[in-house]
Every structure is written in structure tokens, then in C-alpha cells.
View 1 (spheres, rainbow, N blue to C red):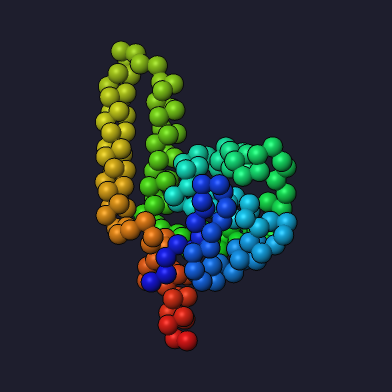
View 2 (cartoon, rainbow, N blue to C red):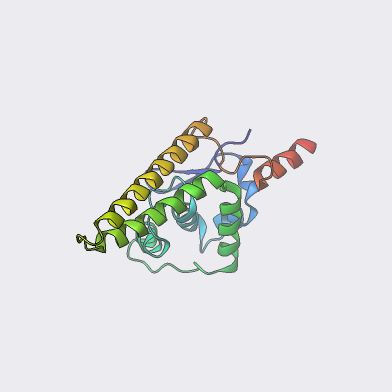
Length: 180
């Protein structure tokens, strides 16, 4: 089984773990590009990896924070380069996990519901409706927690490549490697 494609150390350097980078050829090309290199890999991982500390932020805010974290006060260039966009798509496809995606969508929608509920003015006329909404919100929160428990149980180690399953890019590439 292949493990993580790369790791990022405390100083921000990208460390290739093994030949798993071959699973994301565009990312390898980004890594080798003298104008993109390690910083662009950090950007892609920080933006799109499920384990990124920035992952729960809305994408526009996440991008601002990640650009600042990676390039500090320098201008980020090449973010819309076709090679970078291809690397992002390959990376997202490789690590795709439907349970994690569902959890993230549920989290985003819970946030939106909370914002709406927060603006609701409670009156004697709508108190019953507000209680029904609150009960539904509690049910949704319980569903999110149950899904999170499923996700935690299905991941047997931190070194597992996301997207490992029957019909994923990972499994297809692993089958091709085994045939060789």
C-alpha cells in the first residue's frame, strides 16, 4: 500500500515520501517547476487536503489565509496556471472521500442555518416554529456527529491515502502498478 505523497515539515519544506507522487503527475511537474516548486505544493495541500488546518474556512477566506501563510507578503503568482489547476484537480480526485465531502457540506450548511437562526427574532407568535427549527438543527448536528464517527472509524491510520476505495483513481493506479 502506498502512503502519503508528501509531507510538509515545520519550516514549510515539502518532503516527498516515496514514488507516490507519480499518482499526481501534474503535481510532480509543479514541484519541479522553478517558478512554482515547494511553495505551490504547500498552497495546493493547504487549500485542498482534507487534513489542512485551513480546510474548514470558506474557500475565498481560505485562499487569502493560505496565500499569506505560504508567500508571506510576496505576491502569489501562477495560481491560475493551467498546470497548477490540473495538479489541483488530480490531487482532489486522488484524495476524494465521499464521507468527508458529505461531512464538510453538512458543516457548511449548519453554519448557514445557524446564521439564519441567529437573526430570527423570537416572539410569542413564532415561538413554536422556532422550537421546531431548533429541534431540526439538533437532529442535523447529531447526524453530523454520527458521520464524523464513521469517518474516524474508517480511517485506520494517518498514513492512509484518501480516496482509497474500489473505484477511485488511487485504486486504478495501484492496479496498474501491480500489473507491471
